[in-house]
Length: 566
Image (cartoon, rainbow, N blue to C red; front, side):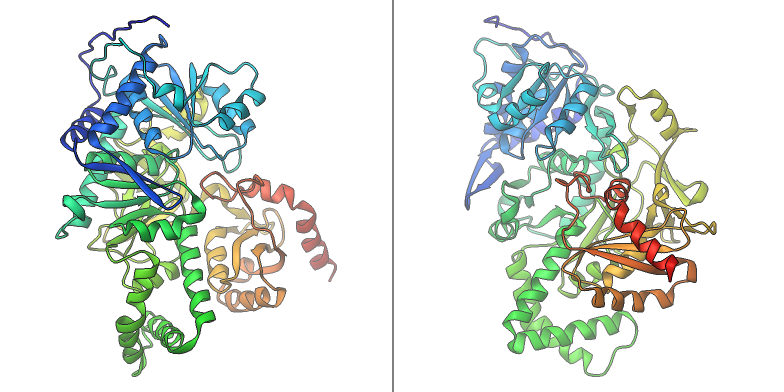
C-alpha cells in the first residue's frame, strides 16, 4: 500500500451524509449508538462514531478504488457496521449491504451480479464462507483490519454528488433471483426528510428521553431498506440507538432499553401477543380471569356489541393487568410500535391498542426507498397503512395495482434494463401490489398481483385475505398458505402445532362467509414452519410461494387427488 494517499476535493457533496456528519459532530460528547452483548450495554458518542468512520475511510482510500466502485458489506448489525457504511458512502463508493444469515451461494450470486471491488466482512467465518463458495472473489477484509486505519492518508469531504448512486440493495426475490435496486443520494435524502418529520410528529409533547434524545431499540437487519432508512433517520435526529446483537434475546434486550419506539415486523408482534396469552394462561389466577374477560369485552366493543359489564372488566384490566403487561413486554416509555415489511392483521393491531400501545404502519418497497405511506400518529385507522408521504404521488392502475412516482422512486435495477423498463412505465413505478384508498387518503394493501390465484373456472382470488381470516381463527398456526392456481378449488397448507380438528374448526368459521369459489376445500398440516434456512421464506420473512408449491408438490397433489376421488 502507498504510505500516503490524498483524496482530491470535489465540489459536489451528499447532503444527507453532510447532515449526518454534522449531527454526529454536534453530539460529540453524547452517546448516539450502543450495543447489547451478553446483557452488557456499551456505546459510543458522536465523536467516536466519526473517528471510527475516519479510520475506515483511510483504509478504503488506501486501496486505490474509483468513485462509483461497488463494495460488499457483509456483517451482522453493529456499531462498526454503521461507521463503515458511512465511510464507504463518504468515499464515493456504492455500498452493497449483504444479509449475513443468507447462504453463501445466494450471497455470491448477488456479488457476481454487482462485481464489487472489495468485500468487507464482519468476521472470519463470513469471509471463509464466501472464499469457499467463490474462488475468484475480489479482495476481502475483516472489520478488525479496516478499523485499524492507515496513517498518512489525507481526507476531505464526501466525493459524490446528490444524484449519484450510494447503494445497491438486493430485493428478496419471492419467485426468482434477487434484483439489485439502485438508490441515489437524492432518493435517500428525500426520504430522510419525510421520516424525520413523522418521528417529530410522534414525539411531539414528549420529553424525548434522556438528554432530549429519542431512545430506540433496533433489531431488524440494516441490510433491509426500511431498517437502513430508519437507522440514518435516527442518526440525523441525534437519537440514541441501541442495537440488538442476539435475536434470541430481543424480549429481554427490549426491556433493558425501554425505548420510545422501535421498528418491527408483524411476525414479532404475533409472537409477543402469543407469549402474553400463554404466560397468563399458565399463571392463572385473578389476573388471567380479568385479562380473558377484558379481551372478550374489547372484541365486543369493536363489533358494536358491548355489554353492560364490559366497561367494568376493561376498567379492571386497564388498572391492574394491562400496565403490568406493557411494563414487562416493552417498558414504561413506549410511545408506539412502528410496523412494516408485511401486512399486519387488524386483530393484532387492535390487540396492542387494547393494551394501550399504538401500532403505526408503514408501507413501501425497496424500489421506493423503503416507504410510500406512513401512519399519522394522531389519525391511525386500523387495517390501513396511512397516507402517501408528502412530495410523491400514489394512485391505482389496472387491476387496482398501486403505482407511484416521485423523488423516492429508484433509478433502476442494476444491469437489468428490461426489468427496469417493465417496472418503470409511463413515468410511474408499478409496485405489483393491489390496494385501495379511502376518502381520508389512508391506504389499505390487499395483496400481490402476482399472487393472484386463477381457478379453472376463471375466478381470480387474492390469497392473502383468506390466509389472514384462517390465521385469525387459528392462533396456533405459524403460517397459512392458500393455493389452487388452475385448479377447481382452493387448498391450504398450515404450519405449526395445529391439530386437524382445530384447522377444520377454523375453516368452518371462515368458509361460510365466503363465496363458494373462495372456500378452502382441503388442507394439510406441516409441523415444521417455513424458514429462511429452508429456502421457503425470503430474508425478510415473506413466503416464497413458488418454492413452497414445488417442495410440497406431492402433498398438494394428494389433496386434490383425494378430493376428486370422493
